[in-house]
Amino acid sequence: MGVSMATARLWVERWERQQERYAVDREERFTVICDVVEHVTAGRTRPLLLDLGCGPGSLSARLAERLPDAEIVAVDMDPLLLELGRTHHPGAARYVDTVIGSDGWTHDLVLNRPLDAVVSTTALHYLAEPTLVRTYRRLAALLRPDGAFVNGDHFPQGGPHCSHLTAHVGRRRAERLRAFEHEDWETWWKAAAQDPELADLFAERGQRQSAHGNEGGNDNGLTLARHIELLRQAGLQRITPVWQFGDSHVLVAVKD
Image (cartoon, rainbow, N blue to C red; front, side, top):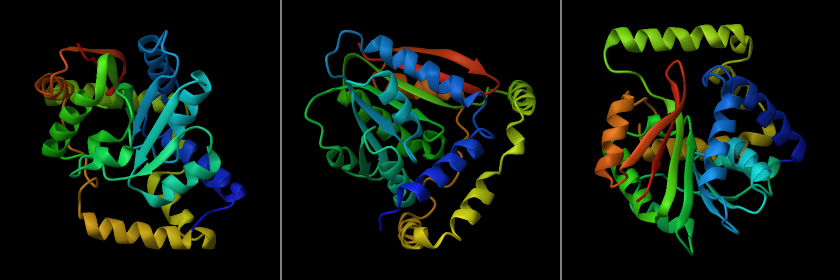
């Protein structure tokens, strides 16, 4: 079910553009995540990084460029996006096909030492709260002391007034950056489904979605405060947002 380099480049480049609609200042968010990872791994000869919900490798590719000596394990359950990443960014990461939060999912990672950092961007808000709790606890166990969990995502504020205000600020910023001129999520998927080279991967994707039901299909709606509370319950006590625009944040939790 492999795809050609030209096909992978086409759909990854279109993916990058459409994602700008959903992550305010997406490139700056990536840069901040890389800044944090670079800081917490300073002095490590070959830092081990885990990218959760990697999609077609967007964040892994940027981390690999910033930290060329790092070993990156990139995880997703979508066979189509994983194949696009493997083809378009083949040297960025070791791509792993597994369902985040499922029973035994971390065994699929085949890790041989503690993680220096775990990163994610615009992915974990799809996990239901019980699954997210299990995931946070497992990641805390896998991190080395002073290792960091770095998550860039949409975190609504508590209370409708605050959440509406931050959403408005983010939307206005996206308008100024002309992000809404790009195709949206649904258009990208509909267009990609018409590419005959991707037909087998779409068939596999459909089977996976049927097997896993609605897991990963809805926003969990958890506030920033709730994420911080769940991370503390998982054993990560040093937690701080390091960047925000609208309801888009980069949240960092460091293990003692």
